[in-house]
Length: 231
Image (cartoon, rainbow, N blue to C red):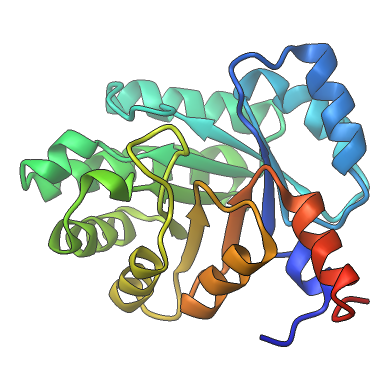
């Protein structure tokens, strides 16, 4: 796939969600990624204020997570968390869907859960923030994945996302193809979980991913430049 390094960087949500990362380490990490041209830096909620201050004036958005990584919080709690992180400076929110609801076939419940967060995101950001819904595809059959995608879109998701990186497995090319087919061209698809090299990132994009979630964004973009295809 022909792609320059700047275009690839602008498709990456460079991610720091390790529970062991404190404020000092987080600020150091943000500083190291600040000028790389990533779509966003995805950080734990506690780091959102620092990320918002440090990324001001750049093209890189502040992304964070809600009900992460299990997704089983009350919908009202998820919505409140979403409001609070946006008020703190987040521009993109990655929430975890109610996985158990999807597994039990309670798609109305899963949709309502997404809708509660989508409403909070829209209200708090005046419609400017993006909502990505994590399906945790490692738990789902293809049929459940398809149904969860549709429920997320009906609920107001701007993106559907494969994985938290803390579940039974990460993203697969097959997941991404299925999700893209389910949501069509208008909704984003984010592949995340286990994407650590250039070949994996490009294979996900080829399958239909419009965002890549990874903690190895610098290395992936550097590999493209080293291959002579970057700018």
